[in-house]
Length: 400
Image 1 (tube, rainbow, N blue to C red):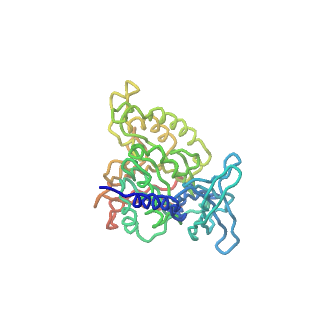
Image 2: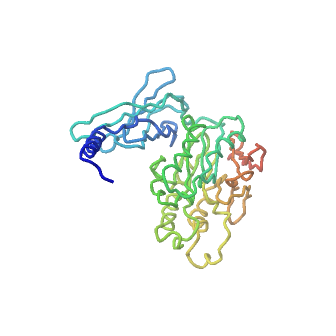
Image 3: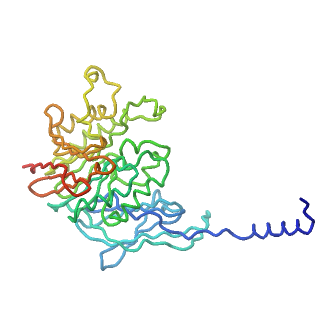
């Protein structure tokens, strides 16, 4: 096909004209959140995600009072030019309701001596309530092993009934191997829609959340008191311990390609746990509850481990590092998942002196939600099926 000179010049002109038209940049917006993390009696962490790099501020205050503005900074630099925003609100009052909203401002040009800002996006106002050490009665909910099925959250919230709850905890494997951010935000978006902008969310790591090319970015979306996947927190008369049981196979398993180091990690975590159970908060608590994805005291015994240190699979290695400490310290209840079969496991002398409440699997009638009710008399956990009926229950009297 021949193109004459006039047509060629026209094509060149049109190409130059199109190149000169600036690309339309979508407006700045909040794509996920805000969601509440790492609550305490005097602090709350607010996290949200924007569609591109921006600034991040939280405006907060009493429901009918003056608002303050909070931001995050490190080493003299205010966090900005990022998509994942995390701001810690401090000096709050225990058991107090606050209203808040998050605000992000577009950055058009981040120069070394001048920054050009654009439009802002905000979340609209919501409210949260801080934890309260004086509170004697409350409830919380536990989800486990949802495996990339966000609809489990609203479905099982219906099963849990209308009773108020103070926080929600995921005991791991909410995602089946983390390949990209969308898997994380899909679960967070559903949680935000249902509760997480008003009620704090804890997300314990399961073995599947250690897998996939994006697993090493997972911590960016969460907040904890010490920045680790193992930590403790308090609410009312309960001291909670969150453990990270890691992968479920030996570190040398070929499927990990030599890129995991969980035996050393669990030894480090075990030393932390020994110090944790000696803290005043732990020793003085009326109830002590442990969350762990894998219910390691219920793991099959490996006779070889009685004669040599390893190699151990994940559950047995967790038992080696955590089991004796928890038994000696006096745990009231462990709540877990992993096995995809709901169970109430009674104490077994010589193995674990506390009951284990285990949630069910990710599909159909195997799904469960665990509702735990705390009173000054007892700690009661009920495993609920999708239709709201109880699979089983476990009650522990208050420590005298």
